[in-house]
Length: 478
Ligand SMILES: [Zn+2]
Image (cartoon, rainbow, N blue to C red):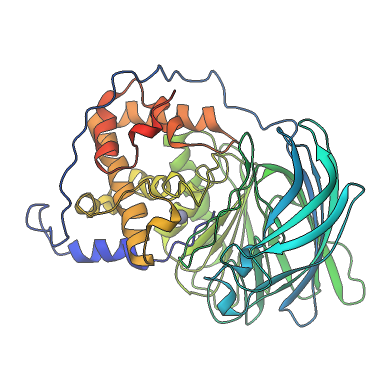
């Protein structure tokens, strides 16, 4: 998910090396003993799909009705979800992201007020290492729901937006924003409920399926709403409010920003409709931001394939530093061009190619970092040294003791390992293999096995990823 991309850690690696002239005299970083492993001999043929995989026709259908109250720090809402599991379940599990230990201390809180549905028995919170009232909300069903059968559940909720820091939800002068702001269906198709614990790191731990999504936001009339999906014209003003709606057929989550935005529109040569919004005194004009966004889409698509969505919306928030990606929506809290490229890259790696952000955070963060360097070769300067950092790129979110280690290993070393793999295999062949990976895993929850499979015909690409412990022997496709 998103990932909070704080500017500091990878930038710190870059800064450290900014004055250096060669790799040899630049390594002030601890160097891990190299673990050179030959690629397994029995890697199966990866192959490349003839076309991009389509979303599961039985994917969940979710409707989110939000109301930003007049205090502009309270959001009330109702989530209606129709769920058709691909294996038998007796409950539904929702993740309450704002209650996580990295988010709740800022004043963010998500509470479920009521749950309804013909099959619903009751609902309860589970802690999952999050703050009160808990990180998971579990809806028990009256009986089992077989694979292929459907149930509909409605949840009323209240979200409180903290102030003073950049997080997935928040508020500042003239702007309120929230993403993962409603109970998030924690289903990993083919696997089951993702009940992973929260961790106190500036990264995500959620897993969610691609869902048919519609969003409605009632907001005070002076605010312009930007959000995931193709947005319609707002309603007429009634009682001092306007209602904004949008739809997106394949979103894992939803981001919304309501603010005193000046907006601009642009369209890429491939027809992606870009909408951006900047606040008064924003550090970029709306036109500048729109131009940078269309350029990032076009530059990235040349390497990783067609942009996943019909639309992309970017809200430029106050300059807290960093950015956070959501499906077809980006919260950008810096004028940095490179952070924007990183978040746009997440539209492929996280948005379309989903992953368990708890189990395999490198599948979105290392790839988004790699993509920065692919479209901006200057940004690759310094990454090579990150290959020497200790730590497993393929670790889960509980394997990193602090934000610095997490960012350095998953983003820095992970991005560097992918760059090294690309150099070893040849950039064109490697990018082609990544396009195959993207097309094969589109709209699913990918695993390291899928990366292995996509690189099966490029054995030279594997040692850098194995050495960095991005891929291990457990990831060899069976
Ligand atoms: Zn990221």
